[in-house]
Image 1 (tube, rainbow, N blue to C red):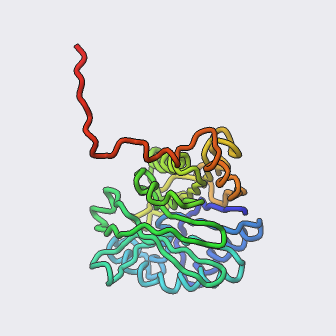
Image 2 (spheres, rainbow, N blue to C red):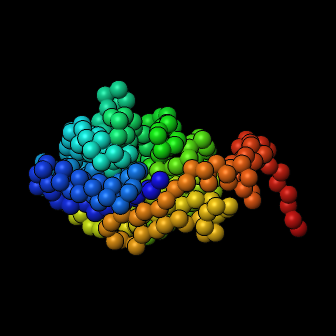
Length: 294
């Protein structure tokens, strides 16, 4: 199957119709290239906040609530497009106020199937900016989505930098990594994390990025990145582990073909068996002997 991952710019949209037209044009383009799984980036939903006016978009707390209020309609839109174009879509993540969780919003990525299925994954570990001033709430647990395209897990941006979160999704064939990074160093931290998780789990990881400037929102006023699709540098995959990568800070889709049989094969008979040998590592609480050299 073909996977598409977005380098996506935020736009100061004026109306809901502008937003719906933009999202459909992106989905139609990827579907037209034969993609069956589409990934949008972290916090790409912040452009929903500007629909309530520039003053709302410029105010952090007001923008979080405005975006959250628009998410149900955005979910209906993505679900309809998933069915219309017969693709799975991981929508751009959004701050969502969920009364069942608590008073502060979670960072929620939402996954849609062509048959009407809906699921979501909340970010697990907050960055420094998400802690202060955003006051975002982490939420458990991790989820594994069993789909017609294989088993899919989601590690949102910073989550991809933590090996034990990746290990929690060791049964996933595909790990989706929607990201939003301000600096080039941030992009590379997430990319290295995404590539490491593909190495450890002997799976495919798919990274999307916000790109460009959106000075009307503090959450993503400047972003750096590109799309990338990675696998283990082993049998059936490129020696670099890079199946495809986009062009830095250039909006558009990046595509790669993903073969689940190759994932199955490398897990069973790769040159190395990282996923199988994971449990041979010492446990985290194992004592370490300090040995002084003169």
